Length: 164
Image 1 (spheres, rainbow, N blue to C red):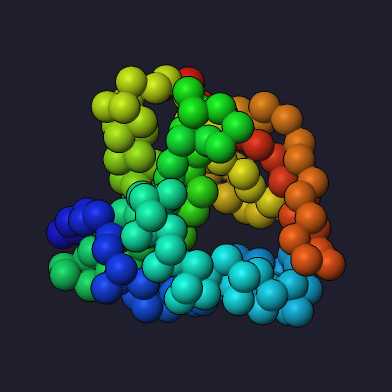
Image 2: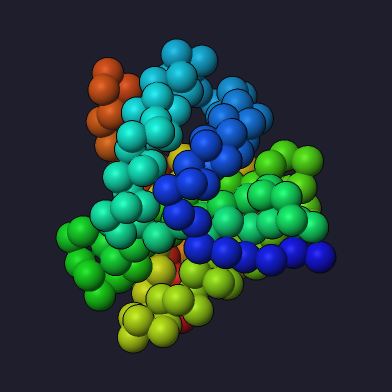
């Protein structure tokens, strides 16, 4: 049994814990340890997450399995085109992967996107991340490639898109 709730600033530490557990599992095979540490510090610091939630620049959803948070997603209108929504983050604890929680969260974000009157949902995925095939099964297609500098590192991504 699961429930979904919109996260608030009191949920930041929970989001950080899920991100930390998931990032090491997901990215250790494809990027350097130092880059994972840097990106977690940069993108998942308490201050960054509190600001994103408090300002509303990203909406966070927490998925709870029998009352315990096990996955989260974050989305917002795209900065460069507010007619397109972007799924910024989607992470499920490794112990829960395969239970359909990623699909549930994507469907919830897609529903919120449609409620806002928008019909396109995009996301970035590392070119070597196994999640790419999951996104394809969810109806996303590669729209283009994007290399994004982050500190001294690069995020080498596909931008994937789904018409809703």
